Image 1 (cartoon, rainbow, N blue to C red):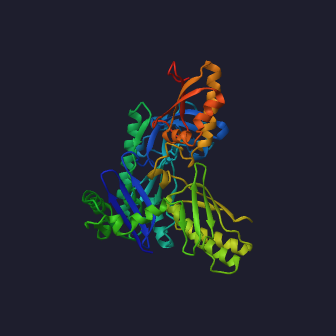
Image 2 (cartoon, helix red, strand yellow):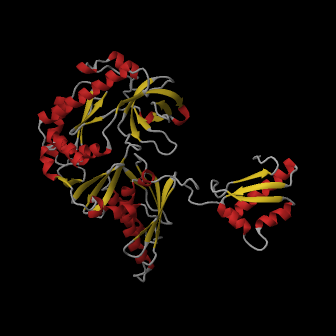
Length: 503
């Protein structure tokens, strides 16, 4: 499979596009206002322990407290205070015996935590007490004794070789995970990576000891740097960058850790924008579309809410087959491939419900689900797909690490606040009627100033016998209608003339 990475750097943001066989499959955006948080390590303080939901809320110095589920607390968890006071990480002291019982967190307890999922909407960051420090070739896991090898390394002989190296290098009290890019690397190369990570960890512990307050201890790499560290491997044919500064930074990094990848690095210098040159902008625009057309003539509708993502598959103009079952199967199979691609590209996480075109045959329903799973297997994010039910619904979950592309690239509408619909003008008039009746009774006044949005003002003035005149006759009041563009469509102010003051 042909894999390429293109990086577009501007004054306001950096965009990283990952292409497979010339098709955009992942897009990352980094800007000063929306920096990556996953992997950041904090000194936190437990603010509240809620046994009913088996979780604790932890103050890490941000506006919202982080969420720490008991399930995300390592069985060998010990409090931050005990760890920094009793262990000498610098010398790699012998690991102490620890209780294997699930910990009971206490309010005001200080702990070390790492961000596992970024804040989404009103929800704070998802935290874990199992700290891990990723390097180029290995991942260092403090307070562990395990050794692991990436599942993507398929060669059994190479897996065994790397496992032996990891076991020989593993410091006491630490676990090691061998990464995919460590294939064919010698012991010394991996050892240098380990030594760098150990120095990092010691700095984190020393900083935690000195800092009395909660807050950030270690900022993980930005999106661009982490992409280079985690994804730029020999199977990437090209990494093209349109910024000379960023090109030089990546070049310097590769010289130190992976000089063999330098021939794959390219500085893009054409006048045409890099994302336009490789048709990436068109794919990005398509990723925001609510309707995605299929080649067969059918289409998919994507509706994202805070609770879940709903996808509706429709046959549309797809009527080439006379047999309805064959036509539905063909459309559903194509939709399964498109949906899997869009979920990955849009970075949709959480619960997803897909309404496929109804299929009578259970064999056909199974084929569609299998096709969906096969396409999702290309995704680096974990997923779980349930069988299709009798009415064509497929439910699945996809791990949510960060807000979706839609939320990162847009802001909620200030008018509808994400609902997607606004109150009808007739509903606004009904509200005005209710308030007129209420204010007339409360104030004993009959003359009012009514301020409304210009569109509502025009609606109230329409017709020979306008609505505003109808209101005056109905309630026996005088209304001075004023248009105010600062008001929303459904907002209005009703003020007695004498006081000229909102009630």
